[in-house]
Image (cartoon, rainbow over all chains, first blue to last red):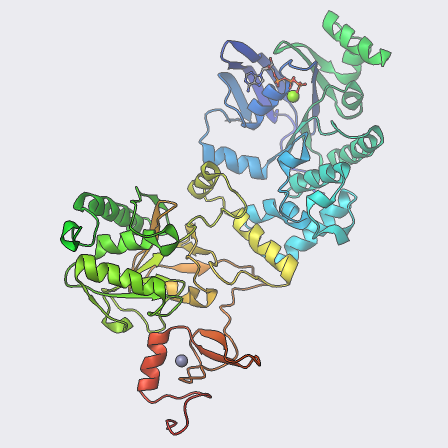
Length: 259
Length: 290
Ligand SMILES: Nc1ncnc2c1ncn2[C@@H]1O[C@H](COP(=O)(O)OP(=O)(O)OP(=O)(O)O)[C@@H](O)[C@H]1O
Ligand SMILES: [Mg+2]
Ligand SMILES: [Zn+2]
């Protein structure tokens, strides 16, 4: 795989003062962080702490109320929608927790993987199919299943298909919301290994939301801990998990250790 | 109630003006679906109320109207729409394509090339070409606005994956002037090449869905395809059994209970004219053959 020509001395994503309210209730507030090329940032925190809200604002699925998001120097909150949609289907990708939200259930596996290619202008059926077959292989789905619908796949396969569909156009930045949630433990482990390999091979930058600290430890270089919409601690993953500073993080880590 | 209770061509002038505005907008933005306030017509939706309203808004007392349904002028649907306008607009009607100034059609484009000054009005059941894969109207509108047409090719991809070829044979999607993807109504894809660079004005009306769209004369219209699976208008490998035409779109008919078949032009007016000119086919009555 080719690495993207992103200059390594400039953050890919600069987020400053990002705030989203639902009426009176805070979704997330005053979030500040930088994401560097090739970096995997984990967002952890209990249910309702604002992880999905933050991710949704970052990916442009929801409109933030305040703050700035600079993607490679461009403010994604103020750019025209067409431009942001182009970003969404070229340089960005989004893996949903529920594969049904990220797949077209009425379309074959090959069509699902090929959609982004066709969206950016691929017009050669044979080549699209070849690329789709290749990607199914990379996510460990047999090429002969290319014409099956996602419904005929297991939950883990559906999730791997969703990943292939997202990565086929070699995005720079992948958003993931609980990509291993809802899967059996053994299926989760296999998916995590696969994700780790792809992230490394493709040099992807990733922002991954999870409430599972084991997932965070395995994938993330850096962690942000959220509570009540605020980031209460951030740092290198090992540091945060082995030597948590905030009392809340200590609680979060110890509760996992008890499991 | 007597016929005189109706305004010319049934619709009141305010409604016709509203429809004409939509038509002009449609002509100004070829292939773009213009919403319009579709009116109740004294016939069921399946009968092409969209087309009827467009025709009503276009007709003048001097016009000659032709109505075709699946290529024929004499089906119930075509006959009743023609009668409707004979009664409400007292316009002349004709079955001859060249004589008509306004032609309302369902499922076909006439074989005889249309000329400048003619108007072809299509009855459209589902105007949205993206509906098959994206049922949300808000989303399809955005896709048109942002030219996000990848899904259209996903549909064709699925066709090839399942059937080995693009199996879509009716309502085959087209791109208009390199911009809007459009549903040409359920005409056979055989007719698609006639959509582009046509001398006539082509107007599309969807009554239930309240949409109007249009192709001005000589518009560039391209059928979607893949480089390695190019668009193929495909024609039955036969000549018409009545007029011998080798270039027209044919209907296949079962002629007896032993399963004997014949192929005849779907455009009956075209076929009859050719027979009148002395052309014959495989099943022409003996003695008629030239
Ligand atoms: N659409 C909404 N309308 C109103 N409030 C919302 C909405 N979505 C989320 N919230 C509220 O915003 C806060 C953050 O929710 P969010 O879904 O971002 O949390 P989360 O960390 O992703 O939780 P989980 O782990 O359960 O997915 C919560 O208080 C939630 O109730
Ligand atoms: Mg969530
Ligand atoms: Zn014939």
